[in-house]
Length: 94
Image (cartoon, rainbow, N blue to C red; front, side):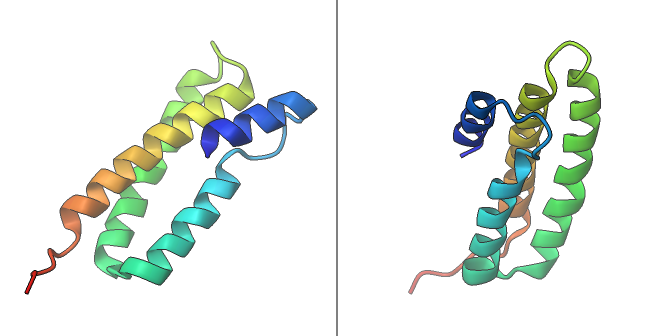
């Protein structure tokens, strides 16, 4: 989804729209509708957000803004999903 958003924004020449917005909407809907493990969600958000901000600051000088935002967002989402998976309670199968 990030790659598609990046490609569309690149195609239309828009450099100021945040790449993360569509991904955050989908991720929030998924979390709210399916999982609702609030502790794991909070830990994931707290761990993924700094990754995005720090990596975005590091990547912007050598890359263009749109590509740096998309890359940092992808890495931050992967970190958040891993943390969420580790912190979520396991379901028992009956």
